Image (cartoon, rainbow, N blue to C red; front, side, top):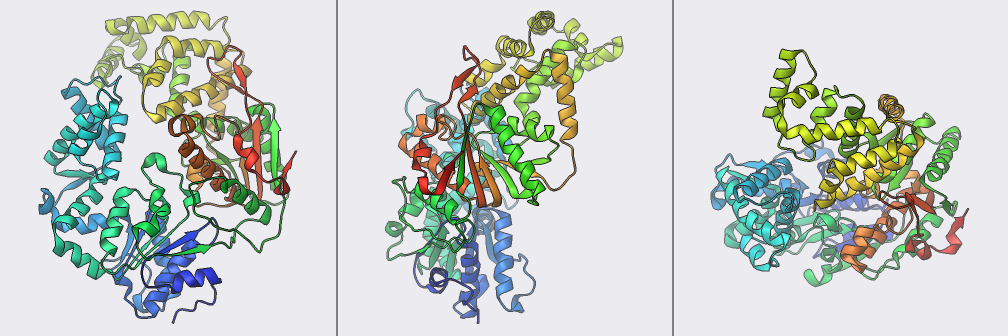
Length: 634
């Protein structure tokens, strides 16, 4: 018999409530994984069902493996070592639903060997459709068209719905036309995409009572992790499978719902009692991670959200240090302040890997990366690329390299078609042939053989001349403008390209420190060499989104300013809904900290295109949500 004595009272209630729908509201650090795994062990040890009769759903394969391993360790060894096999149903939404539909391929007009296309395949197919339909890919960005298609599938909305619901003369209407051709295209390829997996499974369930009944009888219990991150299709899938017996237990925290931009619907958790009649709500309030000051600060902050379920937080941990708030003059000073604290804490025995800088926007990392490099502190970027490894930064540097060195073939090949100039792989291959035959460089071969690139090379001739007298920042601003690179990003409707403009803003700001292009390019070479350090103990730099689920002794949250936290796009696009999700992001950031949390902000930030090169920043509205009793302003 599984022993529940190691659980607190609320955890015990969640584990021992085995009948009907249960929602466990598990705040940050309250032991949600322990509850889920203990619940599996408890149900199996009571003989209510075998582990093969439990459907346990997670969002990542890593989480699924952890759940299985911990559940098995709590049980006797009757089931052998914790490994996945054909009998167990613990996995991600897509993996489990795919397992259900794979044998039923004839019901959705595929062969038994149908394939699943990834995001890159999707984009390639959409681009071809747009060419065939003569749709301008500059006016209607292919990635945006894929985004619309995926969001429709997340909500189980077929082509006809998309066509009828799209506003006329909008991007959405164009995407709906592409959607129809896209569905035909992947069918012809004997393929489906990830969004199809749940859509198809739901369609089979609705049209085949015997299949639905088979799975309803098979699974005596359904358990779901991170329920606040589910989309409409995932909710509908869970609802159908569990409606026979009603034994569904969802664990999540509406205060950590931060993925609305990728289709997650926080209403799934907020409306749980309405969607699952007779549901029991159990709140885990005891936090095992953070000190009282951190927990009280995070709790006071998130209590300002109106779209949330009430909950109380408490901890047996000591009060600890207050949350520190520090205002600096600019991002350079902000980085000095944070990194100096990191250096001191390392000297006092805190591992670098226990300290994290959590940013809202990727452009913020540059100042911290350079300061860490200057002080010889190794770091790791979680969930993204280091600043100088990002595509847009590499492109900008390539423009500068070709300006200084007209024979730089690597730089030339990187940016010759960015923005598009009608130069593809076949044309570049011809340049290689000419260069080899004439014993010259690739750029010189291109200049001699391609009339299309006449203006391109003239631009570099002018920039090369200006580089002799113009400071490097002004030079790169001119290049990005006259080459059309900035316009390419500005005219894009891709969210990633908005972030790329922010990153280039930050690159331009960094150039103030250099007199000329050669000095900057030499510096970049050294930076890229230093970042190859193999030291495993590294400071973590991460976006807040990528840090969810992680924890550190010390957390730094920079950029607590209007326009960054909350992000200006979230406020502009979603109004109060966007502000509430941004506040949840702040809550997530604070609750990553176990012992210390630092919030920093700047009074000025440099901005591309601003007359003075910088602007005065306004402190984040969220600062007013922080309780004076638990914070300290330096």
